[in-house]
Image (cartoon, rainbow, N blue to C red; front, top):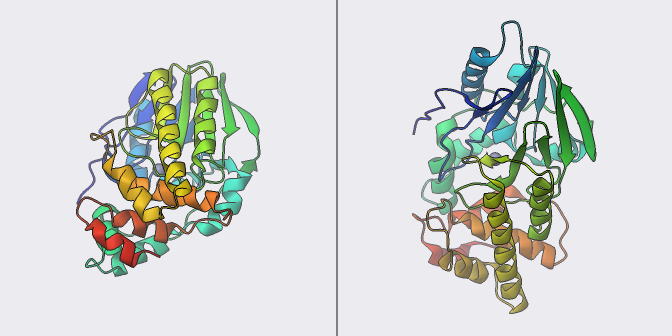
Length: 331
Ligand SMILES: [Zn+2]
């Protein structure tokens, strides 16, 4: 399946341009945000592949003033669909900023070459293999073998300026991952949420628990934004974000009820998916990952989650998979 990248950057304000790929109902096509003022430019997140990153850079050149280049990249977290493209910008001298927690966790993230090999070698006759081929084969070898880590890290809060524009980096993890940050542009009324928020697809959260993801969403609302750019999907209003926060609590409460009743992860995940009330959202199977991550916390397991077994679990609930196979094959 080929990838149709955005044809242009969308101007949200004169200083904020959005690269919004159509990533509905699939993994890996994350949003990137170009922030520019005077002769300075900062990019929030980089795409999954070298080709997509070069495409984004070419579109950025069309809106940046002559002679202005991207000198700062911010990674909202360490997942590859937000950071594999870093190298294109560091090769031109850019710094990459992320939280110290993200930097420390990068050893848990698959490298592009590891992920490409996993997708190439997996057996398409298995639910995991079919799922990986369906959602990740399109990215090929990503065009890079190793991800470029941050060159500058912080914890808590970091104030930057882009031209005359105030840019606040606020650590909100653990939430989606251990080290999430959000980017607040108070003068523009814009917050870049990273994967603390997904729009029009079911969320996946690797760290959690959902109470912490909800707290991170509330932190976004506390910035009083006019517009919120999620990690994936279209931009949102504060009302959309409030509804998303309420949704997270409903999911959390259902998972906790299943756990309290002594149900297995598979039983609770199946109930949650069957009761899903957002039929237009894609990737319903990711509710199984939310369930498993929440159960880990409820069971007192604070070790970092291994991503592949979690994706394997979700694969059993994907629309083309046979969910009755889940209980027998997932440990
Ligand atoms: Zn993402």
